[in-house]
Image (cartoon, rainbow, N blue to C red):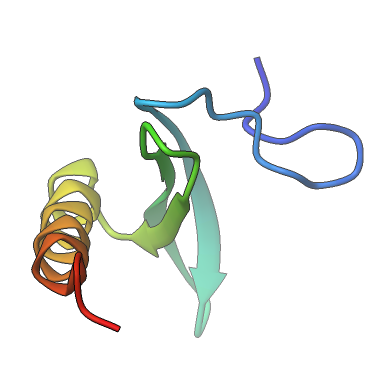
Length: 74
């Protein structure tokens, strides 16, 4: 299953995560990368690319913490 539809939009369902591991070349070296999407229960999408799934989830958790801190502001 692809992470994106034929228009390039994320197919990640609400409350779930999708990720895909791929390799890329950087300065001639092959490096592993993880493309990661997470959609909140209210439909907001978080997306990142990192060197590991653990790093992607750390970034997601940081984003969720900041997002929760801003609830009720503004």
